[in-house]
Image (spheres, rainbow, N blue to C red):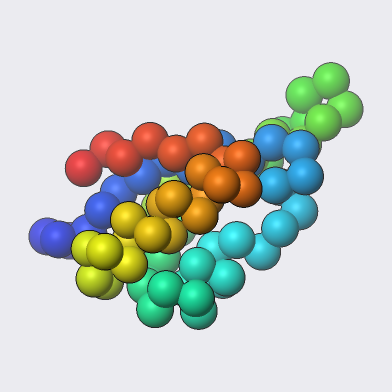
Length: 79
């Protein structure tokens, strides 16, 4: 939807076991809509990719994205 921030999130190692999406939603009061998700094992290590749409205050979304980076989640904002 117009105003959503659509991003690709890549989780590896320990970050795959964290409940980051629900944490971000509660902590920053943003809605996070999962558009696509996939988890695989690569050389015995979990690797996950999500495409999500954030909705809410721009500053809150920016803070949520920074928190992901701080937790070793690779982020790419598509639009």
